[in-house]
Amino acid sequence: MSQPLYLEVYEKLRDAIHSGTYRVGDRMPAEAELTKQLKVSAITLKRAMDLLRADGYITRRPRLGTVVVSESATNAAAASGPAPLIGCVLTDFDDTFGTRVLAGLLDASSTAANLVVKRSLGNGEAEGDLVRALVADGVQGLILEPSSSQYVPPAVLELITQSFPVAILDRVFDGVPVSSVCSDNVSAGRQAAEVLFAAGYDHVGLVSAASTVSTVQDRLDGVVDAHATRHVPFDPTHQFRMVRSTVPGSGVAPDDDIAELEKFLATNPGLTGVVATEYNIAVLLREAAQRAGRSVPGDLGIVCFDHPDAFYDKARYRFTHIRQDEARMGHEAVALVLAQVRDVGQVTKVTLPTELVPGSSTR
Image: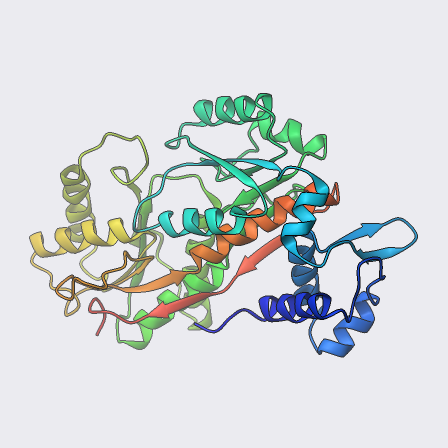
């Protein structure tokens, strides 16, 4: 995968500081001038500048603008004191989704910050308690993967109103002035459905967990958009949104979900393609299809989101899936918090592109 453009810009500017083109105490050119010189958009430049600021190379000073304060990230950290302590609350993580996000978080904070990671297992009350405990312990910023997108947790809303550095991970709170990073789930859902349509699966539905997070709704919106593009109405009965065993802390047995999915397929014999919002849901769905006497991909096509790596297990079944840039998601979350630590009140919403990976679950 090629390096993101904003990282290339970051490296060019960092190298210019290392080489002395921009010396300590120099004022950086105005952003309009830099975008013209580097031939990039203002958003790309902003992300690169945020990384330079997060690594301690530059700072923004009143009436002066952006000023170089160090020739190296190490010197900058020493000059500015101890690395900031950042708290992170995840719902959970495994090899299908989250482990690579965690790797990105750890890599991005390895020299720029100290990271304390907790997990809520999807429990909203525990989530609030963890956030309050981290703040009480003195964290200077917070990264949160909320258990729900229906409301802002009170403990987090209080922090937002106080301009405390917060970044929301893999979720979106519409209308709330808080930084966030997530994938472009609407476009990804649309692409997943379009792949099924293009492969000849004429009736496409969606299967998801019993979840209230924005990612699920966005993926459904993308599937509906794909239908609209083809001037085909989306059939609401072709969605099943009650998979429970994949929800963190649910305690529901996978076999119970497989039985419910088998009933869903039996009551929808015309359904030929399904977008599964998670890898584990695709595994359950494939088993349910086999029990119902429907072959994958012959009778039923499946496209899911995310997939565990299987570099050494060539025999593992591989689904056609949407790959999210999880490592970059973690990296961006740390950068968003560090940018707020240095420039209080800065709000940035980052949307990351996804990639379609062909597999054996579609024709």
